[in-house]
Length: 119
Image (cartoon, rainbow, N blue to C red; front, side, top):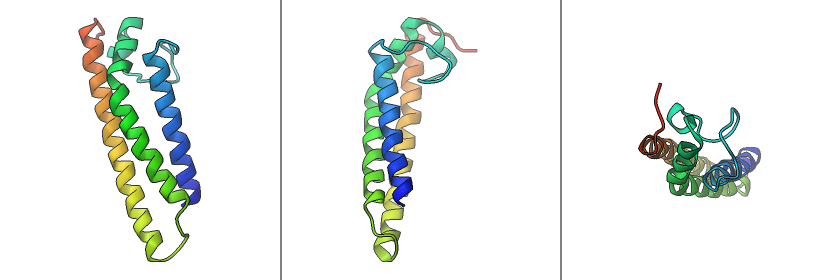
């Protein structure tokens, strides 16, 4: 679980960092990073508005993902405690996923309000 935990923590940092950079206007529309759905990518204004709307849920999801990863990375490798940590990690990943998907829906709504389009 150590590797999975470290990957989770690093992944959380990257996800939150990308959304934060885009929300602040430091990361523009691109083909590699950010919330890459048509409505958000429609314009610079839609990009920033979408990422600003996604920011709170992304932070929550990232925090949950990082905490679950930290717990997994520091847990015993075997035994009952390891099974419990595996369950906690799974629940943390599920919560983080729900937050990130919800953030994408929030981003879409905000982007559409400023003129983003859908395809």
